[in-house]
Length: 126
Image 1 (cartoon, rainbow, N blue to C red):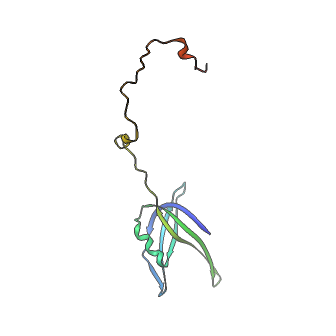
Image 2: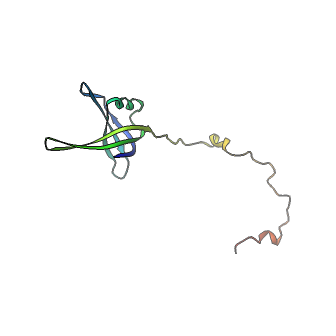
């Protein structure tokens, strides 16, 4: 079951070796809303290093699988992340930054017709 969620990287932990052949790295994502939620995810095996490219407080998009299992009569649920993408921040543009987006201003914007005629107002809806 593949899912996706966007949030803020709240906390990241070091990689833990559970055995000689298995390693896990956990991180916490802060989900905004009326009641912000702190949700823990895990990365496994070779994907543990994916988190090295991100800093705490980065806005990220996490692709994950929902995993569940039973062990000795207890049930466990894991959010197993398999891909993390940084969300591009939208920096505020100043007018100087936006100057290249518009065509040059025309010098002669005034019409040579100076007398107002009745037919100039024929397209009014009232």
